[in-house]
Image 1 (cartoon, rainbow, N blue to C red):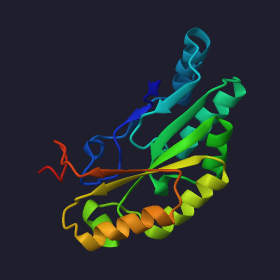
Image 2 (image 1 turned 45 degrees about the vertical axis):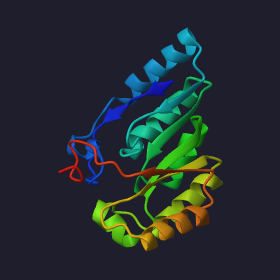
Image 3 (image 1 turned 90 degrees about the vertical axis):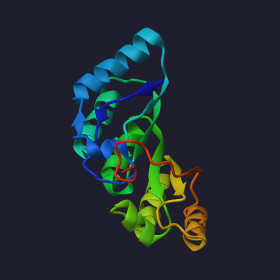
Image 4 (image 1 turned 120 degrees about the horizontal axis):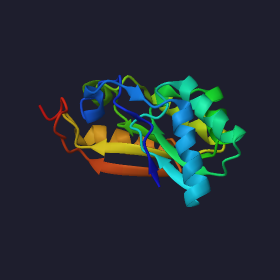
Amino acid sequence: SCFITSRGCPYKCIFCEQGSKAFRARSPKNVVDELEVCVKEHGIRELDFFDSSFTIRKNRVITICEEIERRGLDIQWAARTRVDCVSDDLLAAMRRGGCTRIYYGIESGSREILHVLKKSTSMDMYRDVVSRTKAHGIHTFGYFMLGNPYETEATIRQTIRLSLELDLDYAQFSKVTAMPATEMYT
């Protein structure tokens, strides 16, 4: 079951339509109230938080996870986020709250391409966060994009090398498609 708790994003990656919209999020109580209805009235046990970056407000997510745990909701779930929006206390709370997989937007193994995409991340961040996520017992999924502006055979090889080095549980490689309402499209 797909579940959305927020819209928009404060980051300005040139390929993402969410970055052009202000971040707005549902309250933890509102989110967990709906989760409880899903579990108790509809028997849902697995769901996917489909927010573009679920953990932008870490304290909000920790509160959601604590409330899932307090109410005894027996669910497993996955979420998408950025490597610069997680911490050990957040990962621990997510695992206790039922998180079994995190989808990370890694995009490229080239610093130059990350700069072009306006991703404020680094290879060291990717290595650190993927390792820490796995240490918390959460499976890792990396999204990668090929065919970015200024991409070369060498930058594609860097991306492939990084994806192998990270020892992700899952990886997805997609060709770049410029979406309307993005800087890349313009």
